[in-house]
Length: 223
Image (cartoon, rainbow, N blue to C red; front, side, top):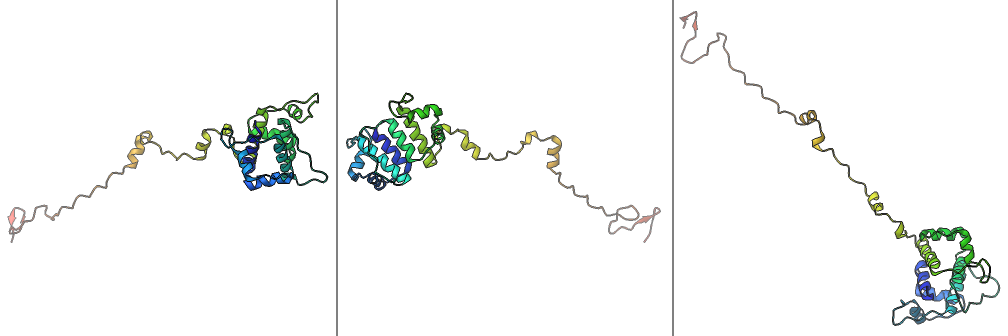
């Protein structure tokens, strides 16, 4: 990883504006112009890209320590003229006041498992028998996990395609008509009410009455 890449990642992680970045440099007694900063923040393949020197990288990290933890009594630390991944890692640890458990949790956010013994080797002084060089992969994953933690973003690798589907509840499905018993279907459809037949007029003699004709009783006409 280049110093420029690390500077860009830190700026994005803490959502620092150009003015804020310049202020962090100033906390370590280094005046930086906006033009210089813009050149350092350019992508590596940009024609206006300018490499960030080790001295300026160390100065920025010293300023970040002051920004996050306040100014300490005594003389300000002298920035290193040569920085390594181990130095950068250690300065970030100090600036954020991280414990070993904190760092392991941040690494886990980037899906990287590191043992506590392995982690402690990165913070040993160079030349110590247990010193271990911090590779780009370690520092890159730490910065990625730190970004997830500070910006409250979820790692892409941890997202499941079913996560969104689980949020949306499926609508309740009604039972198909084909599964209903025949008796239920018949009950659902009520037969229309039948009309009662109209009452037929009747007479006491059981014979049909006609106008102009007198009823006959016992076979004889009566008037």
